[in-house]
Image 1 (cartoon, rainbow, N blue to C red):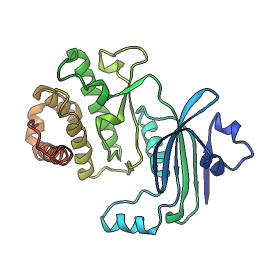
Image 2 (tube, rainbow, N blue to C red; image 1 turned 180 degrees about the vertical axis):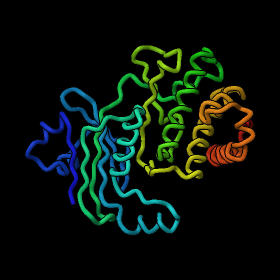
Image 3 (cartoon, rainbow, N blue to C red; image 1 turned 135 degrees about the horizontal axis):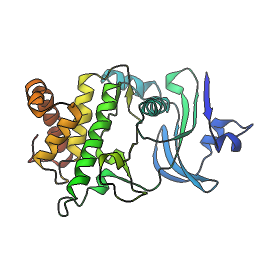
Length: 273
């Protein structure tokens, strides 16, 4: 079973050609190359694009994931669906110009996803890296915290969890300079390769996503008030109500984030929610 969706400029450039052959033949700057997946940047008509080309993962990989109670990622369809869901939710993300999926056997599925390059953006990880020594204006910090919380909340309440939910995967648009309020902040969500899309997001995956944000922001100089501000914006309720009705959830988020930190850095973090 073949599924192909092409938009300009691929629709014109690949007209009358096999899109899977064209995707496999793409050349450019390779960012990732593993046994069954290749990610690269290429240019077409003077514009940049990113391509993710998947080949069959094999039954061994699928069985291994199932035995570990993990949903196997067998192709680009996972990210394609996640992007389409975010688009319906009015969340900024990558713009798809090409998608294809070929085959019925999940172990031998071939697929590709091609998106436009995001220009004039910087990851939140890079944007915030000097905050420890050079704190940002309060209005800017508040705007970013509230925007990030709003995106995470919208995703989770509409059945999307990222699974790699770190601040490095949120790209800040700086085309018009540094924003100073939440309405001016434009954040795009990227790297949705492992994202899951359902009608409802299970609690454990919500915890994992929020913990990922907290873990990746632990060392950028946030204060306790900043963390409480995120909680209030995410939960959409007063702090008193949060501590009365969601205390266990936020403690679980903190414990999960601290485990991630210790695993990554070999020592426990000092801060807690």
